[in-house]
Length: 201
Image (cartoon, rainbow, N blue to C red):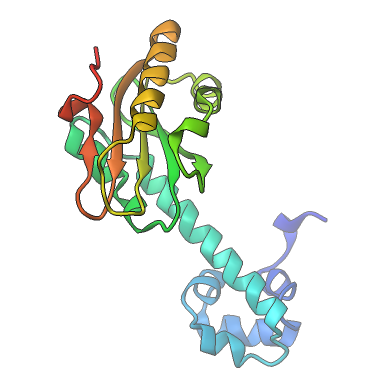
């Protein structure tokens, strides 16, 4: 099936009866507004709406929002330590530890950001190869890595420092600028570069 050839009503009818889809589009004017600007209560009140259909629509909404977040992040210019910390500030509210990488071009624009690891108790189990798979695939000029401390304390562990050194060594071998490793925490975020925990070239 070529989805591009379907009308808005036909696309929506994958989630609600066709008559309900037509009524929704009349009320909200566009498929954009139906998916993104309706409330959960409004969606629940639609004739023929089931929990499974509601879940699908809300999932699409969340996917679209996250895609927009990624686009916004990937337009960022990182020139300073504070820029790097601000860029990854969204990690502050994560309930589990996540390790992220930002891939930068020669002008220090972020062209890609990805979560490398999620739910890791400490950095000692993170394989630097996972980071460099992203680096090599996207032909990075420079990288920044970041992770959060859900405990709220930004003090780097020995494992954090060890991972930073491993990434630095591999970066040097590949001719990639490793700009910083930042730790995001509610009690204050830090840059390992700025604080001198690791000597960056």
